[in-house]
Length: 602
Image (tube, rainbow, N blue to C red; front, side, top):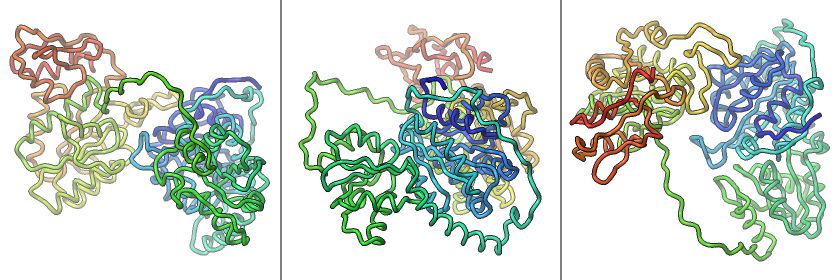
């Protein structure tokens, strides 16, 4: 054993390695991404690691390996679980042979997601057991226990960590590589009565699952993570995950505490033991009232008179992320104690507003601007998607009319066209998202005779989540050099006859291409191909000749590049931000901006 200062996701990865994991598959998404990346970095050479093209694929790859008796880990964020839910719902009915842990990073807030979702609720829906760690150290230990549990009961299990666990840091005790489990893999044994899902098998296994989960409720009451901390008084507090840590930090007296580490199946016997001598229990949790509802159920089932409070009673906020301050305030009110006085200090000035914006020199800005200029004056809809390019909705570009979930923009554009055929429908999708969930929508458009223009924003990486490789990059997370999957080849194989590839930083050509392609009937595509500025190094910066600048503000007002600023009434460029992409040079009506190097972006 040795001590390391680790991010929660790193601890989860090392815990999986210590548990003897054989295969790890996932799809990048904040706050989960670092788990798989850490496994790849610290791989002892015995683990297959892959960024799958989406969460559904990752779930199925891991299931196949688990069928063969391997220990497998799947990683994703909470919205990715929606994508993976199709195989998961059937997988629980089939079961697994090797231990299979589904690590889902929930994002209360949400801080970097479309929605707030609580995987604890999904666990109840899917009937899959769930582990919920409260600290980085516990995350490391608990994921090892989750593998053992999964293997013992032949079921996939959830491992749910939230952002504050995933991205929190702690100095923890971890095993040396020599201490990692080295488990043999039996291999896949053919047995259609077990591995082939049919209605008869589902009926039989559903009954077994219900019986198993009922029994697990009692078993998990003895699990060390489900813990009662003794205290005085007749008011208690029940919590979980990072919220349990918040509760402990906010406590100034010894109040009875119940920590729930396995919210499903719920440890009923432990809850009954906790509530025996209590008049009230406050449930501090995020996001759904999972513990609160379970405690109410337990009270009714066992005839307890304890009053349960929490989100449903208005004592805890019904949505959003809990904080130490919000938990402190809730406990002050619940326990009838005076609010803690804040230390007096000099008032701080308000922080400047920093709205999210595309990076200086981002090729997506050039792509959006080219489409905007080309379609000026026409009735259009611009359907966006999930990625950096969602920021195309910001002024002055204003080029993202819809954004729902990954790949949805392509189908939404079709829906609008079929009802408003006079609308020029555009769908924007990134290269990674195209592989993840854009291909089916494109086939649907071609098959159902839509009239739309697909814009693929190809910056040769998965930019928003940290520049992970994808099938179009020609390399894997394990460092293998592989054949690139060409987006243009896929589009032509689908049947599209018009597929143009353009450098969006060649503004004149980009505008001309959009005008020409958008005028054609049917489904057509433009691939705007230019690398992400975060993975290319600028060789020259643009600069403004103030004598030639006429102060028209066209570069600033139309592009919104953060490197463009005003110096008095004239434009100027911040050299610390400029990448020399030359877009502003091409937009300037008097040629006052020069010096950039577009070729350096390639």
